[in-house]
Image 1: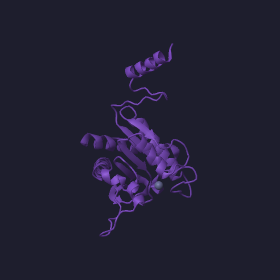
Image 2: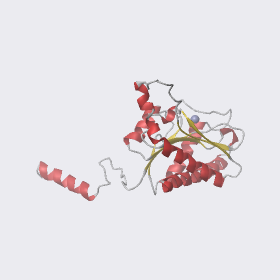
Image 3: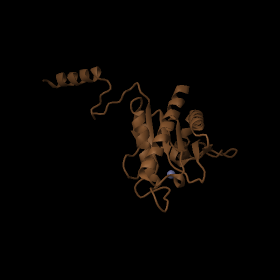
Image 4: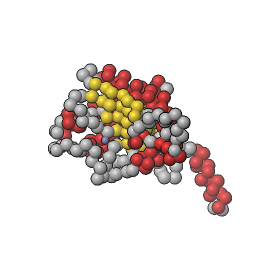
Length: 226
Ligand SMILES: [Zn+2]
């Protein structure tokens, strides 16, 4: 075949199958794109109890469970699937490059009572006449989506409170470094306390399954409200 014929052939194939890229991954363009970011990884363990699993391992397991439950209805991308460390800019680059509709960073806390913490990006206000430094332009990107990020936090609060009666929730705007540079609604959640989790692997897995369901419902609720 002549070069032109081959090219035309490829273009025709792409027109027939618009969702098929060369890499073999199929992006369903009619589905929303969600990036799930399991915190820490590699040498960065996060919260590390004297016995039992570290935060990096638990959030990776939880993120995998959430991703599997979302996959039939959303395009889901994980920032890491292994025990490796990725820098904050790399995590956000994955979300921005893929034009994600939502970025969800997942961590744990270490409270003595069953509770959840839900954050959106909110840096301290500039003083009067203070001009934002050039390097802060990147950081303040999430402010473009602050209203939507707050709405996402509210969806999580609603669903968590409906499912967990004896659970305290805290929502907060904070200058969260892990959300810097997001060009989409982005939140960070700490749905579980590491010190209250069971050591038994089966019991732990059951609890993570239960929370994965609630987190998926929260994501659905947010997109239904939009
Ligand atoms: Zn953490």
